[in-house]
Length: 278
Image (tube, rainbow, N blue to C red; front, side):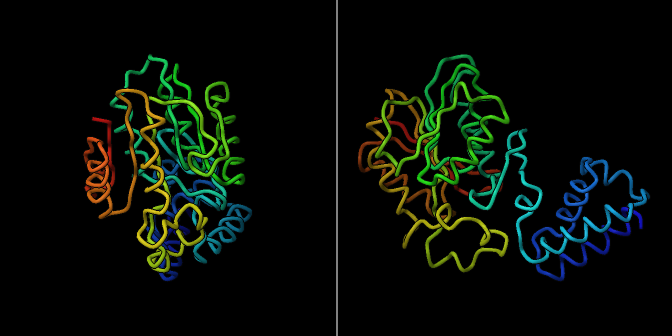
């Protein structure tokens, strides 16, 4: 069977199973099996698939059709030009969060010795990406989940930033010491009642990383209430939120003395809040 034939049947299988982006997922999955890039797969439609690779592909395809995230199947997710290791213990990094890193990075000079804090670090994707972008920065990556921190540690080692990224297990600010030039967070923000409406793929991810409580602000609210005590003068607080949450949070921050702005993500959703102290 050729690549074109296999992708045609695989795309149909994933589409009938209700999978997100069935064609792209089939292509990525086959690229993983063959040990090549997705571009190579698309450029070699007539390549004959071996029986061994075909059997492995069908096995992995069944897992994808059952709703398992592609990142869990292949074990990684591209993020800011890096391959981030992913397990069921952490949230899969998404393009919106890549955009958060890019927008945050525009606020800082690349060579300065900053202190950054990544709250709710999960896989460590934000912390690692910032450490790679800012070679003289030190990053504290915080999470309540020990399992998530173990994944973050693997990513820190994989990308050789263990000398500048420190991990800390803490329930938000409880164990944090020091002050920072940047506090960035992609906290759990999905209102509990909306969890049941998430896609099958997202429902495979840890509830701890998704569930933001009744109104979606159970983690974000205490994070913001104490953030000013950990921010250096002129420092930036940057948050990723759900659609519809950014403006209420920005207004709430303004009421307690912050200057807050709302930024759109790459999908034109008002998703980010950037705030500084007045």
